[in-house]
Amino acid sequence: MNENEIQLKVQALVDGELTGREAEELRGRLETDAGLKEFYERLTAVRELMAGAELPRTLPESGDFHWSQISKAIECEERQAKHMARPASGANWLLRWVFPLAGIACLMLLLTLQQTRNPNLSISLGSDHELELSIDDLDVMTFNTGDDVMSVVWLDYSIDLQQDEMDLWLD
Amino acid sequence: MPEEPAYSSTEEPQLVEWAKSGDMQAFEELVARYRDRIYVRAYSIMRNETLAVDLSQNACVKAWQRLDQFHGEASFPTWLSRIVTNLCLDELRRQKRARMDSIEAMEETTGPVENRMEVETIDPVEGLSRRELRERIDAALDKLSDKHRTVIVLYEFEQLEYREIAEKMGTSIGTVMSRLFYARKRMASLLKETLKRDGLIE
Amino acid sequence: MITLSLNNLIRRFIFLVALLLFVSGGFVVAQADPITVQARLVLGSCKEDKSKTEVSDTIRKRLAKVFKWMKYYELRSRRLGIVDGATKTAKLSKTAKIEVSNLKNGKVAVSLFSEGKMLVQKSQTLKPGSCMVLAGESGSDSAWFIVLSKVK
Image 1 (tube, rainbow over the protein chains, first blue to last red):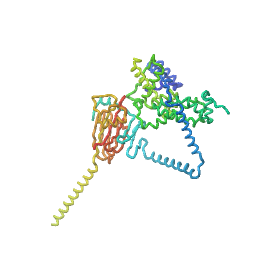
Image 2: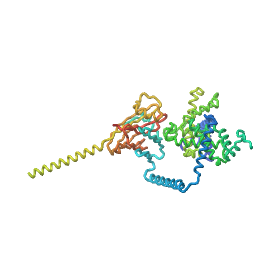
Image 3: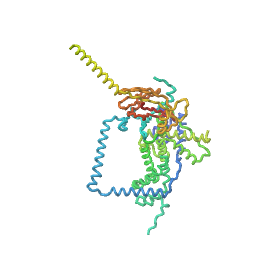
Image 4: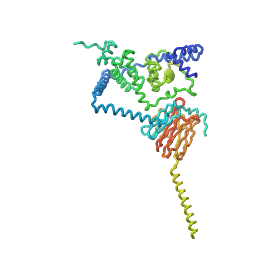
């Protein structure tokens, strides 16, 4: 178990999420490992600091106005619900059931075809852009700027450029 | 003609029962009692006044629609709070593509670069009122990424377990633990900075 | 006389074949116009560093519009001329390199490698004036960017 895993276990102990034998073993270890015990105490202090520390706030609009918005929304939803609950004629039934079901069937077909065609890690961003990740658990965020002059792929991957510059060498 | 009940002095369980049977005024009283509380929760997560107000209103509408699902397993304000939390998480997911998370979002994963994760010591500060401390904590929360702030809010304020947080955030318990750990580390560091800057600690 | 005509014919034939080959070869060359891609390694940072060169105003404005860092420094720049169907490699830092493939009609595929392993491959058409950016965190409070654009 590496240091980080131990620290997460200590956190779980502080949070009461570690139970049974694991908790006992860790408590035993805290007795003999001064560094770990100090870490446990620090984490406990942070947790105690945060407990009940949510800053109280007042809704920035009057109670009457707030309620008027809510009651209007409720009335609107209820009107919609009544409209939907009306018995459907034959044509309506067709519109309400057959077409949506057909739509779902088409979507399922499309998804199945899409899956068999594309490799798991490839992401289609549009007719022109394609992205493929080589590492399963690499998080990525992609987007284009509104004016389309820049397409961005943000990777959850750190490259320490400062370190690289210090050990600089080129082909 | 029967007298109208005095809603403002009626106990919560009774108000809930009346609201469940369709009494809108009883529900209005419940909303009035807890509107600040659910607004605070929405704001803690969203950090945007307009959004927090909208989501608080939506939460009340949803609560009215789902009153028949409330059976008293938790208190009514806790139940309301859960509704607004879920709405906030949905909104964050919707916004995710448009947002750039801050540094903390990437730093949580440990590797060769960050193996030792020190947690700062925060000593109790004399002369700092509970309100002042809460304000500083609130300011520090503002500097966290959405993911890290959400996990801290859900754990510390909403008091959910790791498993519940994982379900709500659509992630694993391990990820929740990492995020929570990182968020605490960052909060301690930010708090220490602000206390040092103001000369309250050395 | 007949022989001369035959020789002439053969010469003309050879000349025509050579001309044809020359022309078709030239046509092939014309079709295989290389694409020139500029790849820049950029450091995004909140700190001023006078020892580093800032990126051009155009790039700075584009990055600053989206990202939160105050300063953008160009650490390395490579210009790659790549013919149709070919791939070129550019080492941008000690650990990071890119491979750029010309997929024809202005479309390129860019593969990013770090410490020898491929992280991602992105394909798109690089239109004049637009750029492709691969990015991520770099240490604390800074970020790496690889900005690729087509050179006219």
